[in-house]
Length: 262
Image: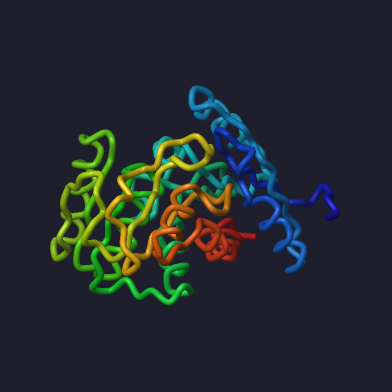
């Protein structure tokens, strides 16, 4: 890539940062499309996120940020404006800097996830969904699935209060969708989704009890590295259909470029 004084800069912000796959894919797509922009990884601890973001608002060649674990919820509070779906999810994974230094927040995770499901031959409408997590990505996926008119969303999270808040939030926006709190058992659901960070490390515990998974279920994970998490390995061994995390990213790349105004 050629980088000049005209090159727009975008940061991907995460903690940890080593697992992210977005920069190589984003930069390759920009090069392919002749877009003069570059994405750079920024390893930022939660305690420093606000100062990091505010300090860059005066950087005139800053296109914005791509935001991932664990900053999606916190970043939404640092934006000057949010789209309706980002406001509902209380999370953002794309932030565009406007010409006057303001930050506009967007959430594309849910759209990318649903597109990945369809690529995998799974139509979400009318299906029952078991979702683990209640953070930024989980919220975005839950709202996107609700918009696709799934029949049921069961939320399981280690912190029950956060799961309850997400259930109430979805019910408020989508009163026609059945949304309930669940246990660590995903039995009886057609789509099972891990939307937590469990799986980034090989010694992470599984996000839920896999003892009653069946081959009729599709098990999806949003973790991108490793591409096949321990959860997906276990699900495959039980005959389940599986979906890794990369389709969610791949289906967002062009949307990211467009959203950043590149």
